[in-house]
Each structure stands twice: as C-alpha cells, then as structure tokens.
Length: 119
Image (cartoon, rainbow, N blue to C red; front, side, top):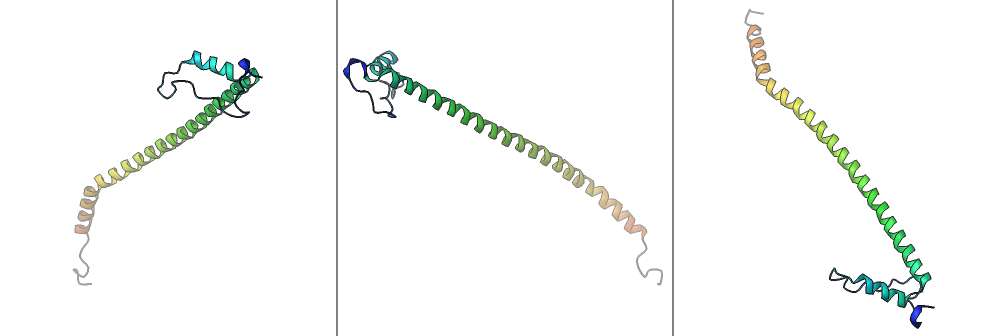
C-alpha cells in the first residue's frame, strides 16, 4: 500500500506530469514528494524501470536513424564525386570541340571533291 494511505495510479498508468512541466520549470523536489505519497516503492521501481527502458529504446532508435542518415550522406557524396568526374570529362570534350572541328575542316580541304578529277 502507498505511504500516506492514498492509492497509487493503476498498474501501467503513467504518473502525473511534474508540476510546472508545461512552463519548463518543474519543481522536482515537490514532484518527488508527490510521487512518494501517491506510489508504492514497487510502483516507483516499475516506473524507473519503464523510464530507463524507454530511454534506452530511444537511444537505440536515434543511433539507428543516425547510422542510416550517415550511410545516405556517404552515398550522396560518392554520387557527387562521380558526377564531378563526369562533368570534368564533358567539359574537356566540349573544350576540345573547336580544335576537332578545325582538324576536320583541314582534312576535308585535303580530300579532292568527288568527281573533280573526272571520275
């Protein structure tokens, strides 16, 4: 039975939020005193166990999300490096086009026109 003769929350129920939690300034001492009056030691241990398990689950979830995002980031950076190499190749080819066109024109000038020699 709970100290002070008051019944605790039903099994599995969450305790009330700390006073002032919504305003960001809970008075933790009075919250702890309130819990000690409304919950048995066993209920407090169970609450602590659940809170610890929930916190560990959240840490694990966060680790997995971060690992996934990191893999995505590495994959994206590999794609960017690949695209950079392809863009450099394309830039080199485009820069070479005027010279290639010039060579083609010189070659075309050296080839006699078809039928010019009477064939």
